[in-house]
Image (cartoon, rainbow, N blue to C red; front, side):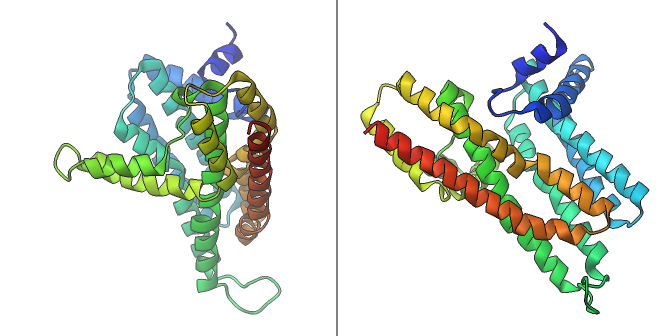
Length: 309
């Protein structure tokens, strides 16, 4: 098998990964995973290194020096390769742990927290364009809204739609399509003791995250309720194929909402010394894209529900 064939074999689905992800992210990540495997490095160690490297990007974005910013951009790309490598390494070696899943889940959140924080500090003393007023606390409020509210929901829905596609394409075993209700039940069954406190805490935050995804997909849940009632033995092949056929064109939009185009735009804004523009675009253009993506997916779910009633 060629290198690309080996990389494709480690991917969950080629439907949810485009050429950019395959060549610019997954392939370098796969090569790093092979190196870490030969060195017997644990996937959790790779995740921790990724968090440290990605977080350093924020500090380097604080500077207005272009060379320093370019180094920060390179570090973020490197961190993303490691973020891909840890999952591939875990699948190669079978070293899958709860702590690894937890760290991998908020790895990107840590990167962007420091990036947004240092960009806000960088801009705090500068003038708002076309005015004589400094950004001051306004930029902190804008970065917080952009990051916690907009970025968070955009990534959440992008991730959820990819898992929905995987669910219909391969079944529940290949998708992380969890239910917030079941996660809360599992959390409540655990005790705050030495053996269960960590998993209980993890399930609490994971259930909240899953709930925030579910709140955005009303028509999908109507479809799932109908499928569970009408097809308790399993989803018919025709229905799976119809759904995937309609869902596949939406997958490139989910990649834009999560990392790809977002980071390219960030790099351009930082490089041209207009980082505030990134926060504005994330709060407007990316939010419009999120609404458009949801509308398309909800329409698909309603059409599939009507067809299989």
